[in-house]
Length: 82
Image (cartoon, rainbow, N blue to C red; front, side, top):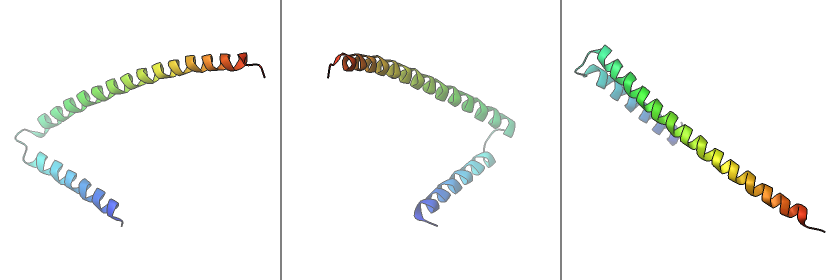
């Protein structure tokens, strides 16, 4: 096993242990904890979806600008006489 693999396994194990300990010592019932986790996950997924939509819009604007500029370049090339 290389060093990177060992580090990733160690980090994964720490996350799993932390999650297990968090559930074991949580002051609330499991159902309440699951509700809170689900609510946070939904909020995070909404934030991620918004970011993806913003990125998609930006890419569409860039694409449109590049297409316009490429059209200008093509017209200039066609106008050159060899």
